[in-house]
Length: 256
Image (cartoon, rainbow, N blue to C red):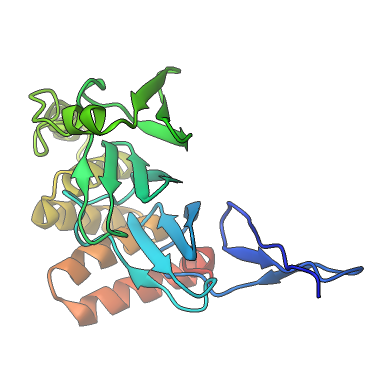
């Protein structure tokens, strides 16, 4: 019997291909709920999926048949931020607009590895060899981190240029200034909400997204983000209503 080859497609949905001779084709596999799937990574029999809108990492041990959320241990919220996943040996690296993170226990714990990166690196892609990790950033630069143990420890050192709750303070101040002049600018309210999510200020993020959906009731992403805020606050009924509204406006956010 031929060995079956498995190919993972990076894209808006997780698809699996099982070529078994002539006429083989793509078959849609079950995908985790969490919006756009922006990255997939494989380590042994583990398949990891990263979602952009919800900013979560999911793990499947059975080729996408069942998924578990393994992003609870991330140092901060990754909503509208997670951009890349890549593995090297037992290491799983996550790239985001807030920097790079490492887990060595399949997502149970995560560590920031941002020493030496700019204050707001905005990582768009990652690649890894057996010896090095590479990150491509929004400003058109490529960064290299040796994967030797001492290098990883240095990258995990406390870095005053990466305070978890202050990286977006200047941006927040700017958006507030704009809103003082244009209080009904829905786009700015949405950007402000994104910043609050990124620093873990879910209360103010919720208020910002409420403003967005009031001004722009057809903004599916804002309804989705508002549902996430409600979910974190334990308001399951409100979260369900917000997610339902988002699904009606943009079903692909919940594509399986």
